Length: 325
Image (tube, rainbow, N blue to C red; front, side, top):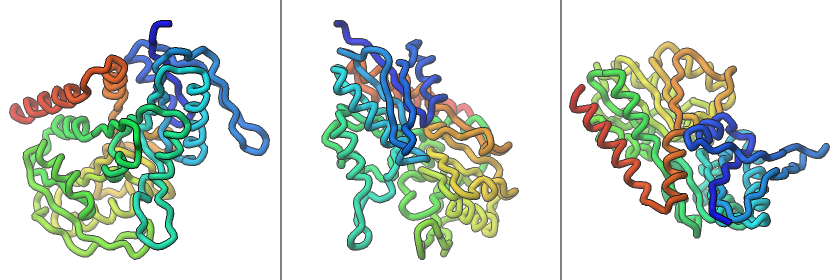
């Protein structure tokens, strides 16, 4: 049997999966997913995947445990159905924030999840902007940790914003801020903060010049939005003009939406690695689709050709646009 592509989606982000399928002109493989009365997941792939290159599109976002189990069960089902190779396309990798033991008797959750995905039968993982790059090393299979920064930079350039400073909301995000600043050919600032407890941040100082500048606050994810909105407030107090928040993963838990609607924030730019329901969308929220980039990446993996050329082309186009600005 000739090797073909099979696209299978769990329920975590069906709209993104449909977009990817549309770009590839390949229908999603039908799958039945339901629950027993006790919450246990039942699923059945309704078309043969024997000999296929299977791509499972399933971010492990909220509800994290449900979506992770769906990913594992779909992977196991494909393995047992004699798929030729299985690629887990996980736009958002849940449990990524516990990547080390910060205290005694803590789990390394990101490593455990990597073990589970491998044990289920995945041959490769494709994801976006891992919380920390070293999570790639938790796997013994190839991991493509793609970057959304090129699409974010392209969107920022299209706005023709002047006097930009890229701001990292903490020291750990300096590398990410530096990458964006390099593309935009501008300077960076870093917010010095401390965390007295999980989900709580206290701003201590701002390193760098922000007065009179339009600030681009960049992070990998927005969860409760406490850190990022606190940073935006501190920038305003230091004399920054318009403030844009950019992030790859929009978790938006709790009252994050109310915080982000604050008038001091000009625009919030995120991607669709996580499905954002209509009730969580607001006027200043801009969602960039990663479907085209993921579709091209799937094609490259299927064909066995280098993926770097995709990003080389993106960065070249951005550089040309920046020069013309």
